[in-house]
Image 1 (cartoon, one colour):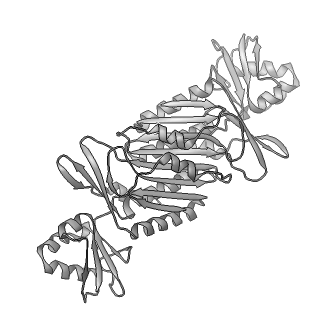
Image 2: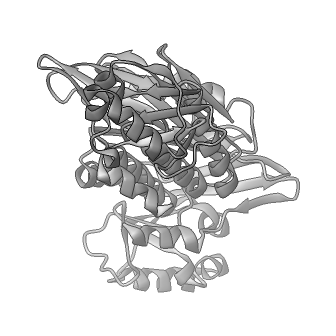
Image 3: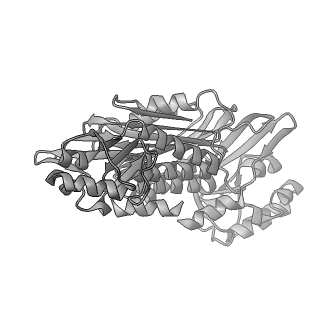
Length: 145
Length: 145
Length: 82
Length: 82
């Protein structure tokens, strides 16, 4: 179980390879990678966070996921700072004995990261910089867990 | 959209890196990797398949997933032949604008691969070789789509 | 003449992965009845068709499907991929 | 003395990311009332507290929570991680 909050880019493929190396008790590994999507006109995404609380909030969410789905392991990486379109924002990896648990835990972690980890996205376009508004659907997504 | 059915091992990390390289229209990438789990005593897994039908069945499932969830891309890799504990059996990767579609499509592809792609697993232990029985829960999982 | 393929334990029980069969059966079930009448190993493999799946020209099908125009038929247990 | 932190557009409106505040407020809402009384920029930032979230010592909390024993309080808009 690990949490990494960093401004540096990371390589999702290398993370996936390192994550499950040399283990034979894992049957299913699910990964989610969030990428800065260019909907047209996006020049950059700036991500602000709350150092200290971020790591603590993510670790708490991971402990809950580990227990609820009997995970063998999980990893959350989340960047902050300046990101260009096409760059990776964050990644979640879960490992379990069976696929259902690995999928559910990954979706649970994503839903919590969206609304409960202290990150704030700001989109920079030619027209200026705008804080991304939280979506009702993201808040609603928490209710399924 | 691609299907690879092969006896050779593959590197999930390298596949994930290659999959989403240089694209800015993708917001969410989900991967699933199935690994030969050693529940104790497993010496090997032998996977038989139906050459020709396998590729066709998987391509059909991929087309359905692409359309239903508006995927930007997807990839299925599935091995056959002799596999040792800890080796990767198969991998699914989906890319979409948003996380919900990428997750749903990956789970859909997995559920169909489990019960509709012509592969048969045989577990080799010290006591001999046994064909893995299809699980009712895998058949039931198809009903949610 | 039709190509008949067997996979997994169906292949093991019959002792063949592929054979050519001359048949006048009109349906999959008719072909199965002909095969079962041949030898004990076919009888054993097809004892419980509810435990089997069938594909016609590489598409999943049913035991009451017609055989007209089919070039390849495959019998196998429920799939266990993924 | 309590450390007060502001993030995202709350930080921008107030023009500060962190300050030390001397307060006798018993609850978060009491502190917010004191801050709003200070200057227009605080009034603007806290105009609609339903659009804000608060954390006490790095745990999400509520505006009616007591401040006793709290060393660090943070105000920010709903999170948009992931």
